[in-house]
Image 1 (spheres, rainbow, N blue to C red):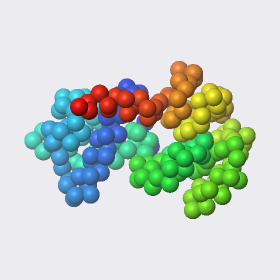
Image 2 (cartoon, one colour):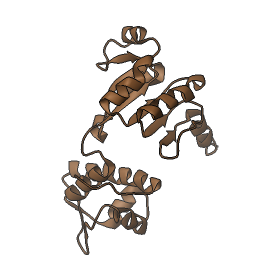
Image 3 (cartoon, rainbow, N blue to C red):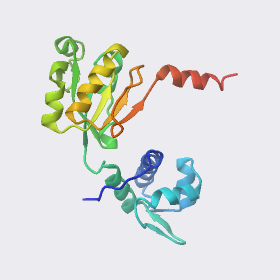
Image 4 (cartoon, one colour):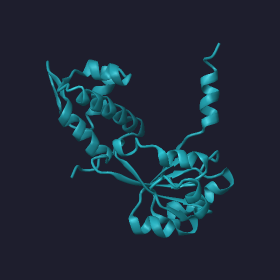
Length: 209
């Protein structure tokens, strides 16, 4: 069991990127990588990489670089992805259904174990090929508590988002990926990452001639 380390949020994000780069190297049977090469692959500068990896432990060897396997395993332990992290989805419209179909979550250490919607019977009729149970949203808090779920994906309309977030927080969820357009009000200890697709497109449009 790796001891929980207090790591800055931006560093956590970069560690996740390093983890993906290391996975690619392992797939290509690369056993060691220099800090310069790994930093270039991750899109950061070598000093930043070395500072970030300082939170993981002492893995680099001067003149040789990092051992890909042990470093990848250590980062996975720090991020909590050494085992599958259970996640629930709330809101199974077009976006929620697409997220349920996405097969890449398990590869990155996450497993969607259940989904919740106001009309679960209709969802199951629309998505018969998705092998994830869909429950009534009224059962959300009880399910989260019983299964000790700490992460949730919120894909509900803006008018319902805060109410659902309140249930998630009260039940013990500590991290929310929010696809709703509402900026959620949550306690300081709860982490919320907002994904506003319209804002992302708007920022991209700046670079189009």
